[in-house]
Amino acid sequence: MRIMGLDYGSKTVGVAISDELLITAQPVETIVRDRSNKLRKTYQRLEELISEYEVEKIIVGKPLNMNGTEGEMVSLATSFAEELSRRTGLSVEMLDERLTTSEADRILKETGVAISGRKEHIDKMAAAIILQTYLDMNKVNK
Image (spheres, one colour):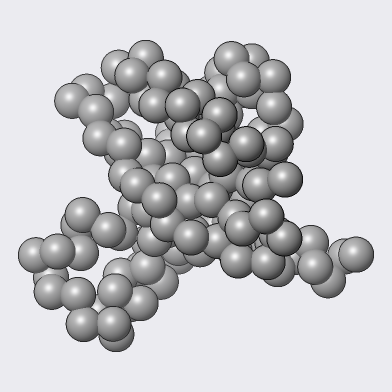
């Protein structure tokens, strides 16, 4: 069994996949789209990755405001997650993702990735942080 983690953004979706033992999350790719409301190819690519990695569950980051309130992006991410669940038949859960992008940027900086190269990696790294948070939370609950 593997779990997929997603960082949903207005023009990108970062993708991460767990190992089979559900211990670690690895960044996989960032899916880029031309316009925020054009998701057909994004869903298609996610379905390909779900099949390739034999994913059984999906975790989507819930982009709450820093004070914990829900803004427009939460609504968009929730709609995305619901449609993804409908299309794939998989369980899709939302997880608070506050500060994951800044954490991803910090990790990339510490590992020596140049500023110009961070944009390419930041969304998939944020997805890995979201997924790793989920995996760690569920280790404690077992």
